[in-house]
Image 1 (cartoon, helix red, strand yellow):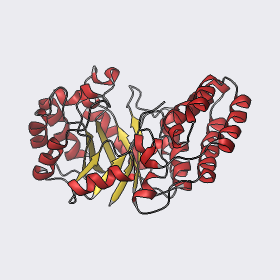
Image 2: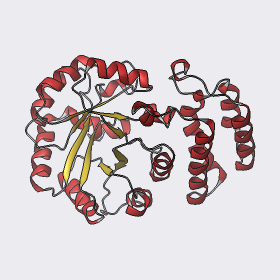
Image 3: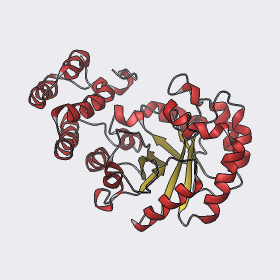
Length: 321
């Protein structure tokens, strides 16, 4: 089984990915949160740091591109090739309204004719391998049959399917009937993405779809950084590992960002997913949310790791704080 780390904007940046890789590993590919080409054709400071080879050593890293303009895609892919990348990923899955209203991400799925012309150009002219991460439509799962006919025309490295609609965001449940139909009819290798939070979730998926050889995990990894290792038969994270992971991420943010507020915003976001690993986490989560100074936060973390006990994954809450 191949396991990929999903690209989650603002969370799985190079600092997080590096700490995850060093502490737990288990991933075959690490996808970089999307690059959105701008009018000047330059990478932003964040994007540059995310793709620098020095910040991704020892990892097969795949940058993701968010655009509905073929020229922008090709120009960005060309630059990424200069950095040494062999593969890029097209984002057709982002459900954010600010993205969708511009006809990008999952919003591009509402314009199949334009999408097909776009794919014609990039698959003809791009020198790099192209994978695609997609949702199954905007409003109704029946949309995906026509979309899959379009996708089948192109030699994708793989088609990563998150079987939710744009309107679902991350609510409701993945439409496994649509995924099963895609598995039967797709001419491209498929990767499944969606709601794998625990090893038990993975086993249930594998039992239903034993022929699927690739999964992508995102929010499940944020909630349990050792998830990929556990799926591969390794041990669950202990407190020492989680503390080391936390300290690497925290030190990276302190080094790269200015101001307590900016650093703590990032750490609070991480804890909103990871806190349920611990018993009696809610009182600590509330205290962490209230922290405004790094010095106070550091004291709180000392107490949290000293007093908190890890809970069994089968008992862990899946919702974020």
